Length: 122
Figure 1 (cartoon, rainbow, N blue to C red):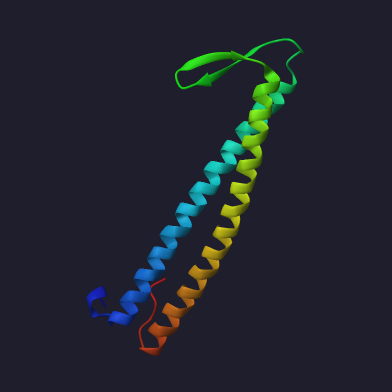
Figure 2 (tube, rainbow, N blue to C red):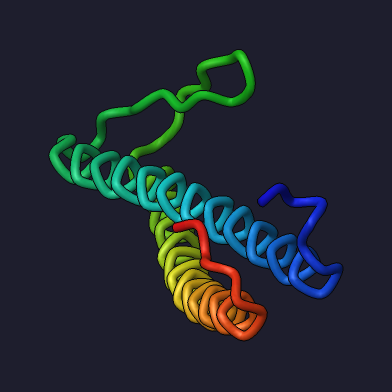
């Protein structure tokens, strides 16, 4: 049975299901990216803690390397870490909600197809 033979209500539900799937994939990608940034930030903080007192470090500002004090960079990275941790938690909650919505819509589509005597494809 082709998609054009499905009733408009079923087509709409399937379209919403696909949109929810895309939304979930975007959220998961953002969470993964944020977790990677968080891990990199934690590693940078760890490396800065190994630097002896009085030594300078260089940080990237655009295309320039700027000489600065390790403590100043460490504070900036700690702020960034807090922001990233909050972002990861928020994305995890969004992902959980999206998974729940997706599953609810999947069940709804299956029920609608079964009521109409059609078998869900997958």
